[in-house]
Figure 1 (cartoon, rainbow, N blue to C red):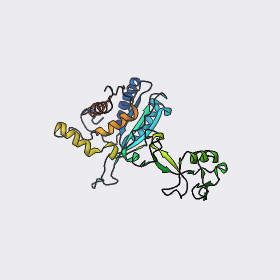
Figure 2: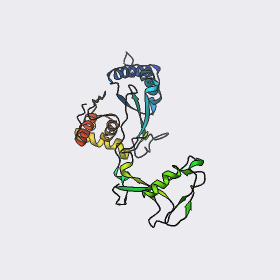
Figure 3: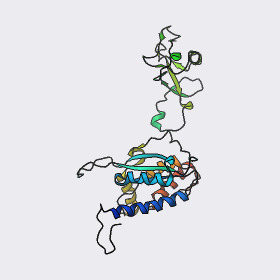
Length: 282
């Protein structure tokens, strides 16, 4: 609410302004909840000013148990030199599910992550990388010496740590050449971690970098290519919406954007369909 009935402006700190925002958002969120499928999820972008209020409102509408995460998107890669206090470089994306039937997807593994797996023992198991055999959780049952069969030297886990499994299992791994003793075979034991055996996807975190999700300048350039002069101040980059879709949608999902804007969500949906052969509707 920016104007009184007589046309005079409502001050930013006036309680009417805030109560109107709450009323407007509450009705919109109730509609959103009704439209969601039982497996559905909603992502809501908000800045610092109303993030706390929106969290309380969403807890009321969707239920505290259906809070999934509050992701932070790094929207600006540089600070604003004209800021009087702190330069805001983050936006928040509140994530709520309709019910516990919602299943979060994994993000695709990146080429950078897979580059770590650069060794091949020609054993038919594919590429692998050396990994630590010890763990921080100490167990006396897993505190024993492992002997290098090439040198006869015995190695105990580092102080305060233990091996990740029992002695019998490690001996089996040594027989299967799953334990690595260095390039010359004379080092301390490490585990061969095969790429084919790791989780084929990445668990998402609540920090979303602009390298993965784009930033405001990128979004403005995208919109400028379509319209010449961007028609509004805060467009979202296509990469950000694609991140959301990868995390939450199947290849057959229906996606709804309450604020169509310049059609970024539709653009992202079409682009993702083209990548993976999906038939998502938007």
